[in-house]
Length: 183
Image (cartoon, rainbow, N blue to C red; front, side, top):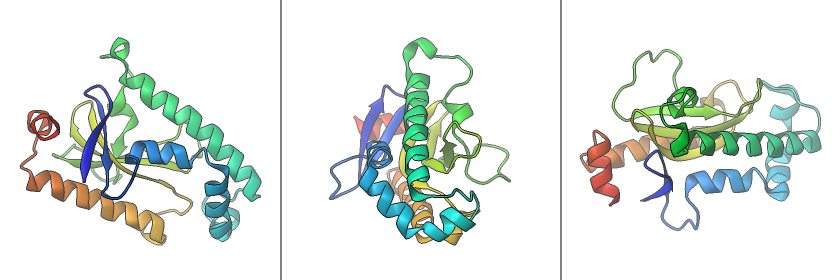
């Protein structure tokens, strides 16, 4: 596992062994790839049509995902720009607790960012290093109500825990320790 800079000191990504892209880049690349999206929605057609979101056709889902991904990536990157430092909203308002019942941020807490649309299925999963600093560890198109319902979202839970365990094994508890690890 390698940690790469996405944008400044605010957004980082995990690059897994054997992968040619970090998790942030991989997410937005996949969400713009028509062939990838068609294969995903075809294999999840039942969830697409009868699940949590109930969107009609595979083609409709593909185009909705592409548009939503463009807006989400643009929003994420604009919140990282230095001229937006201290502005509201910031990354902390975008990345919310993975678990709705978590009311305070714990060290290395699991977070999620959703696409900007009201009913979005796009998710970026991250570990909060410190206020305003996040390590992107995965992503998913979440068509079910909970992550435990489908193998691809369950895999994201596993990846989040793996990244947290790695950071803890390296003694990372805050931004200073994180900086030492990535320099």
